[in-house]
View 1 (cartoon, rainbow, N blue to C red):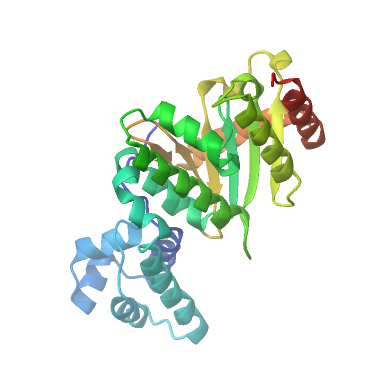
View 2 (cartoon, rainbow, N blue to C red; view 1 turned 60 degrees about the vertical axis):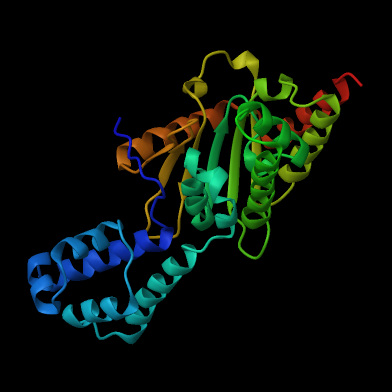
Length: 293
């Protein structure tokens, strides 16, 4: 399995722009070398724009569109909108937290999540970040990142809460499908009180039209999710989906069609084996009632 590592993955808009520009060049019958000679821009720079490794400017894109004989006004405007949107996404709301985000590549994930329209998240041990309460998130981060100061932990908690507001609410919320292993219910994070609040949050979230939560019961035994947690992110067409795997120091993302399909098949198997959303919410309520005071 090939793992692709980058500090900050391309924004959704940059990936769309790269695909559109490459398709237009190929449709024109021109090679990168010929385009480079015609508009007098380094061929390597053009290549990196077509792979999404670097951004570009409206001026250069207009020159490329002229070179490719693209005269359709609506098409030109759509492509230039992608250029502007990519530039805007380089100024994200989480930049002020960069000192605690960058070491774990978390900022890279946020850049991807910000443009996703769908998130399929499997978690075997913890409540997914988008569904955590503030107290649960603080307890998790403090224990998993003992190297951080109290202020840094608070900063990461704020990021997690802002993520929830940004992706699960608003005018265009993402669709979240979450599958949790039953171990999540029995691992007491923080305290019984924190867990009861967390279960209440899960019940509340599970009633949102854009959120589906399912539980894998212990009775299932071994299953494909035992390899570990993952997130499948889907984006507006024509941007292809990808898989995010979080690690302590070098989180990675997988882009190849075969890798994404393998994880998609695994997620579909997990959903098919899990309790229904209604049964899952009932289990949350019952488990909260059974917690010691």
